[in-house]
Length: 433
Image (cartoon, rainbow, N blue to C red; front, side):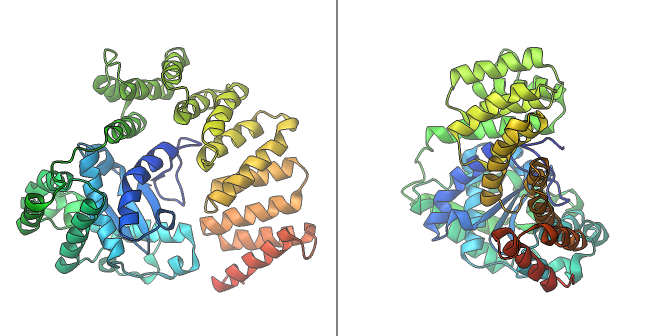
């Protein structure tokens, strides 16, 4: 799946980036983080495009969730139960500090390492995992996700306490455990990754049952917006990932719910059928004129079917509604650049600068900023932006070359020149002299 600008492969790993989905998960998880004494902004969220049912924390305050889990949990309560358990691991410090890539902040290397080890654990094939991790940098497969039974029990207990502190029922956690309990009887090769990395036992389920009997929040219903957000997130994932015919089979034309119409609009977009897709998305915009994600989807539809100038209007509207959405802002900037209108280049630069400030680990944003600077004749800044992108992608030789080019153009002592020196120091730390 490679759908720009809201969906993209990142750091050579199959990661999904989407503002709406990320914000939905943040909406569910932030109360849990705060109840645990954590700042949501300190925790990085990664959505892995993988059908396996799995979620885990690794390498510091990094939360990884497979798309398979997001599409297979039955409701928001089950997902919140999983998030509570994983937050318990973070707050309990059940994390292995494992790899120099994480210490140096090399996002590409960190993701490749983590996902490589997860592949090995999930497949039972250490060779496959190490291939994904590009050698693993000496990391032992068993070191990641090596939770003991005591840690699992502690994470369960912490998760249950967090649910109580946030006034939420633990029925979702219980139903999720119950849904995958039978997998313990299967051969390991047929089990979901979550079962192998998060052992579910009857004793743990009994512990949750005991909590449910005494918790004052057991019968507390979830807020109505939880179901709405969850259904839309799941419909969006399904429509982007599954074959189009499955989307139409699941979300039939007779279904007038917002989530169903949303899924069908995305399916028509994937077919490049704007005659049916645009009226659907326009209907959603009419129903919810302050929803930035519907405007974003319309912009993406128009841009990726060649109507680039037309896409600028809905992208601009989306940013007006949600100005702090760097992924949407990248979409607007890309449309401004691809329109080949010289008058829009400076606006694209402004949008991309805001994007890289909010999301400094986006290699794609830095690359687009390099293009924009190049078109504006600012070649020193263009080379500097290319160096930033190369550093994020884990290409130190390329970064060193672009820094050499940047230093030739930038004024010594200027902000850009100082940043170039910072990158040179980082490269030396990485051993790329």
